[in-house]
Image (cartoon, rainbow, N blue to C red):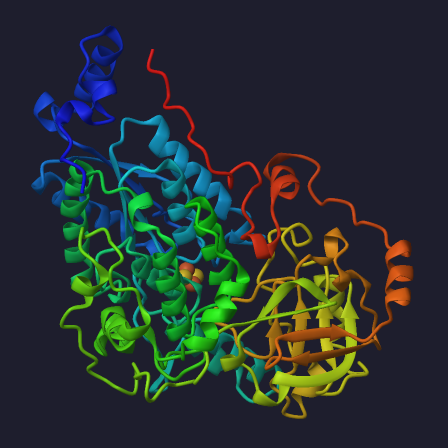
Length: 575
Ligand code: FES
């Protein structure tokens, strides 16, 4: 560990501690806000990057929680400054929050760089906020600690527990099939989201919050605490106290985010039965940290790590149950022989110390390595002539008969084409067909929307069909399920092989062999490629144009080409 910093070593000292005209200006303006020299003199300035907003129900409590953080910072002798950042409400932001993950990453990095900040508290949780905050903080490199918003309470309807997203898809399908009434649907709408906090199934939010804790960037156990539980504000106060010491210790993300830490995080992802979206985000976060992680690493580790968390959509329970069962510390305790216990974390201690004494209280919620929920991990990466750079499936959430399957394609050129066709009563489709959606990738969507769980065609719903193979270059919500093959790379919009699939082509999937093959000859594929016309970009100007120009492919983490490279950016000049 480095010797503790002195006050004159603080980054903020350049703004506040120098006897020149500019520092006079900074200090006089702090006095204008109502602060005194006692508030800042010789103290680390802690930037609280808060993604609260009135349009994000998952973060509705973060406005109040920031006050808990500030109390902790003040108790530990720091000077807290709250800096609002884009909220990225998964439900409301269109066309998709994935368009704005890198925006938040850029905003986080530049908020920290451009202000007199010595350490950061990152407050988020709703899907893209976690990777966005972490990517930006990692690139800036200041000591940083992440506060997960925590899952909302269980949903409730007619005495049944409802899970975010998962039960929406389920009951929407039943409504389309005529099995529930409008009144039922209205009651479900009123019961599915009972408190502030993130989706409470093992969706992208719960997965990314757990992954970030497993990386060592949160206090132990923080990611499992329900948003409405009083443990949550207490954890926020503890985080505020801890970040001040992290600044004095100069405990930066670079000291925490090692290859072993990323392996731990991927293993936890597998054991949680986590969202497929996490693959993209972890690859992007690792690249920011200079750690080479690719999709193959997920596949390798998925073969070694069974699913232990019995949480929807691939399991039975909800995140509230997971907390009562012992939470992430207990899961990591059950997984300890697979983890690198020597990894350093924000506590200044190792993973071993952080999970010491953790116990599983409800074994049916957190299983053991000897009695897993699924013997193999949550995610498989397939490759073949249809996806030369890979694609992803969540086998645990799919009907097992589709894990080895050959069928005829029904190809949709884009989302609108798909939505028109899917409702047709005369669509020529059987349960063995394979639905293919094009132009839904990083550039084609754009933003790789969560369209990957294509609806079951109406004609099959009436026959009781609830799963079939669907292939796309889109993503899928972590709350979704089914035999959905996602993230096909390269995407169709840039001329990946998916662009050349035609209705009637045969496609063969073998998850055991990790293969995906389009049974069309190379000659015929070359002919189709020669006749293919690149679609026009959707955005002539603005952020959408910048996004389309610079976004990378799914297997590379979908970062911007100008944000991903390593290398120091000069500190801002103060004059
Ligand atoms: Fe925010 Fe699901 S909508 S986490």
